[in-house]
View (cartoon, rainbow, N blue to C red):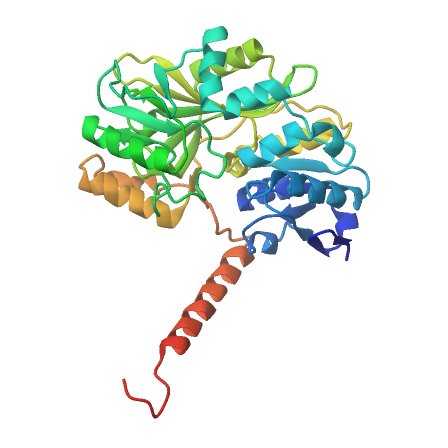
Length: 409
């Protein structure tokens, strides 16, 4: 047991060869590569995975980036051999970019240049980056505190998105429904969301809506080494999201799409990109043209599905950063779907009610091999522990609300 300032480690940290700042999908991908991750997660059940060799608590970067970097540095220095570090949200990403030199003394990781990282995370800076490099993005307008003209030149519907997602899902702007962006159909709805965003202190972007459903969204995933060589890649396609058109992924699959791959490679070359990346595109259903939505230079939920299908990007990264022989991976299976069951049921019901999905088509979408966001037959403890904890909390609430014997109600 190691003791760090404001943090703690359980398990044998000396046996861990990587640190995962993230969630269960990333832990499983690392474990499938034969790695022994030390888990730093806000979800206490992630470390119950059979792949987790230990668990650490570190202040969340979204809450206090300076303190988080200090505690993470102390954690890395307590472990032997500079473990590889995996990171899974924008707050982690900015922390590593801004404290790169110190953290590289304790960890191994590969990031793009710091200015490029800032350009990719800040959606207003991303628009200028896209203009300089002639990237195929939809039309966009920055709306800051002084912007009063909310009349998009492309008409409606249009997309409203925050300029930064750091702390976005922890904010109260959207309520309990996890919107990544907002699709607005008219001026009254646009003014309503603009007021809510400004009240929450958020600058935002108005973006042209690319026609098509969630299943028109594709992503190119890759790991590019320090020499600029792509050591692994795959192409993904969304099947469903919740809320529809604007939310988080609930059903995903890998596909073979050469146009997406070629455009993804071209964009990485124009940017001089290094490290791990996910590039999101949407194919306009009217013209067939691919539009670039965003570039995310970090690890994500897709890596578990990629590993199951044959391309394990966290494993490729580990071999590259620890001096292993490069083994490029680009051959992968399709026909396996990743599903987040509770959210996917909500997404399905939303599609059926809007008459965009038939019940039979939904049933067929569950045919074939599937993996799940939380449950895995060979790794059941995170779900079992989470379920047991939920039952205990429910019983405790019922006990605390029950009338005391002998009192009147």
